[in-house]
Amino acid sequence: MEHTGIKINKELEQLIKEVIRVQLGAELTLTQLSALCMTDKVNMIHTGEYLNQLSVVKRIHAQKWIELLAVRGGQFRTEGIEIIVPVPCKEQLGNEQGKQLKIVLDLAMCVEKRVTELVKKLHYVARMQHDSVVVEMVEAKNLPKQMEIIRQLEAQLQTLCKQDVPEYLFEKLTIKPLVENIKQRVHRQLAMQLMTPFGQQQQQHQQMGLTGPIGQPIYQAELLFPVKRMF
Image 1 (cartoon, rainbow, N blue to C red):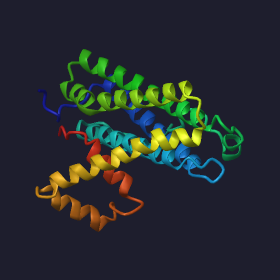
Image 2: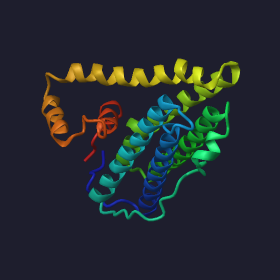
Image 3: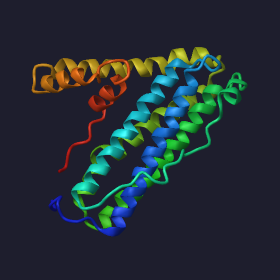
Image 4: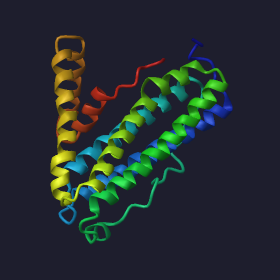
């Protein structure tokens, strides 16, 4: 494997910067969608929780690419970060009775597809440039995670279109178990790692407040979707 300290190719550097911008734009978009779901006018709490988890994953992946750029001699500035798709306001979404869940899931799917498209392009260019570090980062976590999320959203949308049930009931029967499954996976991983050096890291998280209501989504995402440190 090539040494991670080698200065990154300019073409690849620009593409990584674009991936970071899109990842952060995706985080912004998903955070707004999550907040809309939590409002009293929409009231899709479980969907809001799920979208919040997805937004945190985007933030963590963007952070890892920023770190890689720094180590390889690049630099990222937070310019040109925009939402990926237009997000409706609370009143607009609230007035779409019976269609709210499909609208939100469709928007989330557009966001994830945009991220996946760019990550695949990065993977292709990195292979052409023989940058094994970037290739491994994409293959280890970024691309597999993106494909998993898209499969989840596709399954939810297909089931929603096929079943003639109220959206609130569908959310309770499908989205809620998905969110609960994420929480159970976190608890299982915690149980396995409490007797390892990870216990020290957990104490650090507690001291920093990352296990509280505000930091918990970040904490869960770090456990579920860690990106192997390459440098």
